Length: 190
Image 1 (cartoon, rainbow, N blue to C red):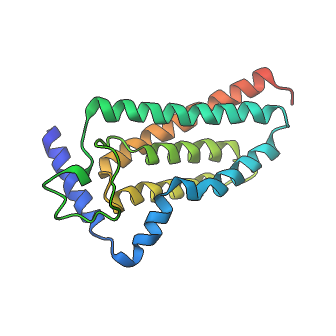
Image 2 (cartoon, rainbow, N blue to C red):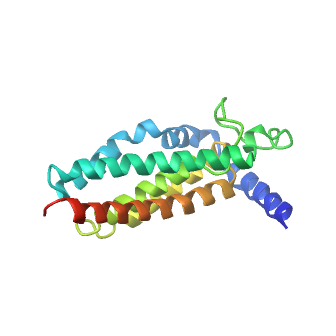
Image 3 (tube, rainbow, N blue to C red):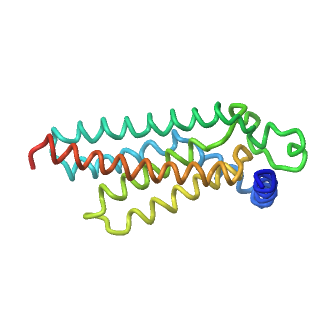
């Protein structure tokens, strides 16, 4: 059963990866680069700052840092615990897939750190800002889905890597949002 799921994952990967063409490669390489999103994260954090007072935003910043650290480290535990090779490290795929960049990352890819981190940010930020921006969470989820697709497009993750990362990231984002809300009510003044 597991072999069938992994084979289906390879076939879906090849289908989605081969949808790409060189005219879109630059866009997806830009999209998948975490550094390009720093201004976006800064805007989200600014709106969180506007929601909280000066002192409690430090608490929010610490929780966000813990959330990213948590999702990164759990992702690495899975990657090095399960040791599923990235598609770009599979000899039987390299000739039939599109590898958009020359270096495809570490040896293992299950599950995607980009997918888990982006979904954690989407869920956490969407819930934090839901009173001011009612539909923001949906926009952020679409942003995160596109981030996950970018990893398949450039050839460094299977769809199951991305889906698992998104599920874990969504759960983590919600749990850290609840944790931040609890700490805010417990330790700060309104």
